[in-house]
Length: 198
Figure 1 (tube, rainbow, N blue to C red):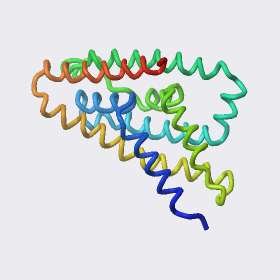
Figure 2: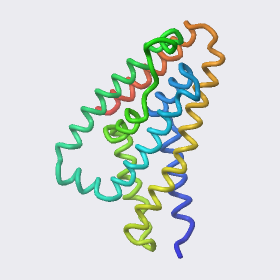
Figure 3: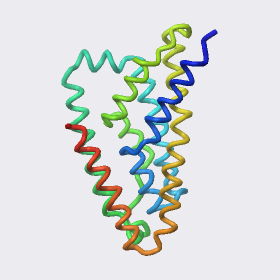
């Protein structure tokens, strides 16, 4: 029987990694503010499912793959940065008027696919398995435990950020205030893209 301490430490790491501001959380908050909680649910589900799949893939062989194909890390950083800048633009330019017209929230598949090109997420996924292996469970048991803990903990963060955005959207009565809020979130998302190269 394994000790509970490694799982508690893993849960604390997962909470810290998922609750802190980052690209996923900025997208969720902006979507909640602009489109409301209900219309943000597909993005929330895509983020959760995509990140759990990333964690599982990292446990199965992500670290080995990045070691075997060194250029893949640079390619992921480039694609991830480009997509982050695209998301930053979508967030910064979204407003209530656009939400009623042609602009739409990030879809399930867009959110899920983004997890695999998000350098912060890839780094967290690989670090989680490297730092929190539970030898008593065997290789498969350890990978599944890390994946399950991250999946469960990230649900809290996903709901919290989408809820925070939705609540902020209710207080941002004017289109001008909502645009300013989204501009700040878009700027923070763009800044996180810039930090990938520092």
